[in-house]
Amino acid sequence: MASDPFSLKGRFAAVTGGGSGIGLASAQALANAGARVVLLDRNPVAAEVLATLGMAAEHFAVTADVADEASLEAAFQAVADKAGKLDILVNSAGTAIRRPAVELSVADWETVVNVNMTGTFLASRIAARQMIAAGIKGSIVNVSSIMGFSGGGLYPNISYQTTKGAIVNMTRALAVEWAPNGIRVNAVAPTYVRTPFIAGLMADPELIARIEAMTPLRRLADPEEVANAILFLAGPGASMVTGHTLPVDGGFLAQ
Image (cartoon, rainbow, N blue to C red; front, side):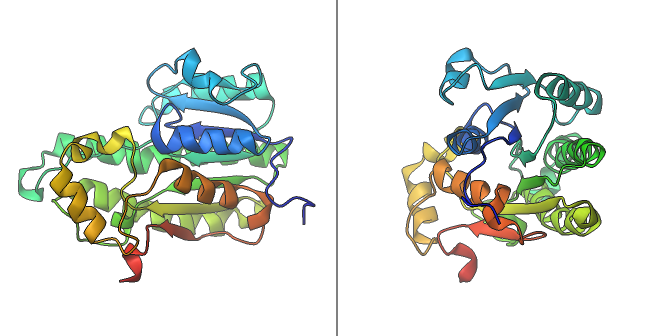
């Protein structure tokens, strides 16, 4: 066991969807714990955003679309060329198209599946290949959702719920498969989080009040609260934890 179970000094971490929201908060938490971090995002990450991590020379960003295998392969190769190794991957990239199932087109379904489910698989597979080749006992942390466990919600969101449920079982399956290589795979399942991802919901005070009322702690989560859970799962303090999804939900799933 490491002397400091929450130190990531000497570790290198990649965060997909790292340009904003939970991804950026996770990158900040990892950097604060001593890790060197690369932000992977389909939109170019502004220098001002990267600078928030501190020690800007130590951290960098690579533009990549997790739904595009070639783009992702090239991004991870760029990471390997610059960093030399990969210890931690956080799969935070995600999207949602909120429509009733009877109205959801196949194209919209595939958009969500390609980002949330296939993107998580592709990034995990590429990262694991690098870790195995280098003999690194790494850690992968996926971002699921309370909707990965619950079919209920405030509105129909079938593609999002399906993909987030898939991430829960993907986490289990990859954890078992890669355990002999010393690679741990876990996930977090956040409730509604105050990020740009739910900007449309945040603009409706009545809807936010309903979300708070259905949450035992009576509030939404802040991205830093999810990032702290990711930090724990990614680091040496969780060295005997693999294959699990940790709800960060204010008690929602306990009901």
